[in-house]
Image (cartoon, rainbow, N blue to C red; front, side, top):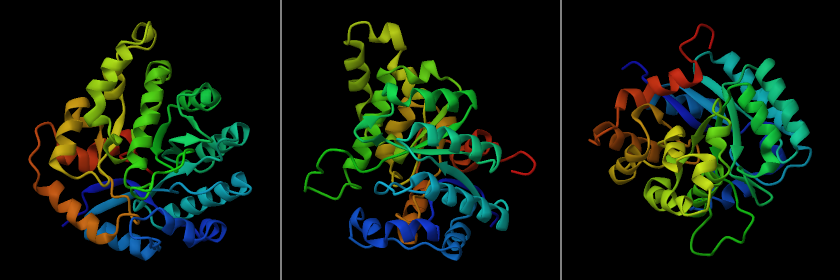
Amino acid sequence: MQPTKIDTHHHFFPKAYVDAVGWEMLAAVMPNGKAPTWSVQAALDVLDENRIETAILSISSGPKLHQADVLLRRCNEAAAELRATHPKRFGSFASLPLPDIEASLKEIAFASDQLAVHGFIVFTSYEGRYLGDEWFKPILEELDRRSAVVFIHPNMPAYSVPTVAPASVLEFPFETTRTATSLLIAGVPSRYKRIRFILSHAGGALPSLAPRIALSLSMMPGLVERVGDPLAGLRSFYYDTALSAGASTLSALCRITDADHILFGTDFPFAPASAIRAFGKVLDEMQVPGFDRPAVYRSNAERLLGLNKVGT
């Protein structure tokens, strides 16, 4: 069968990154304590098996990096090389050396103007600051000026992670929920209307907590008058299906956003091929009102990322 899907949540490990970070760190966040493995061929095999035409590459969250601006530049260039070597099979979200604002502004310009990336990956927090913090204003202003797509991915929180489960199990979805709520409280969706935000993993706990969050924000004096309707802000976000292929999650998601704001994602290689296969079967067979399968699999991302344009 012909490839039909676009995977907006697909990580890669260029050699420069692995050499700097080490496999031990990557193993630490996994529920089984084993580091995921990645290679170009393994990625292509997953794409072919799951009828994915294009995967948008990104570097997942990790530890604080030494000379982050230099290392992430090399990673962004490595993604560009893969795109050139495998046309239409890979796209890329560029990494930014946050919390260094000046270096990140330089990387936005370089990645946009020289590498023609499809967007940028940012993490849910940096040194305890969530993305609605005024600290990020220069970054948001520049991303808004460029009408950028911004893929928000969870990372290790600044607080001590409870021993209940590895951070990827509970803290990551909670961190996505926190940073999205911080964006709503700061009025970011209404202040920076040209940024298109993608929230990982169906928005974490947002689909379940949306009514509670909206009610709580409406009780904060003057907040709604200043930043707008929280539910409208939630509806403006895009959401991917990575690790979230279940009727309960996606039914709730379809109640807080529109059908054209849901994107297909795998989370490879943190989600192994067997999990992607299982989630894919659920997505193929699931009957959820408001879930437009062809749009989720392809046309939503195609439109958002401009993948239907010549040369993209």
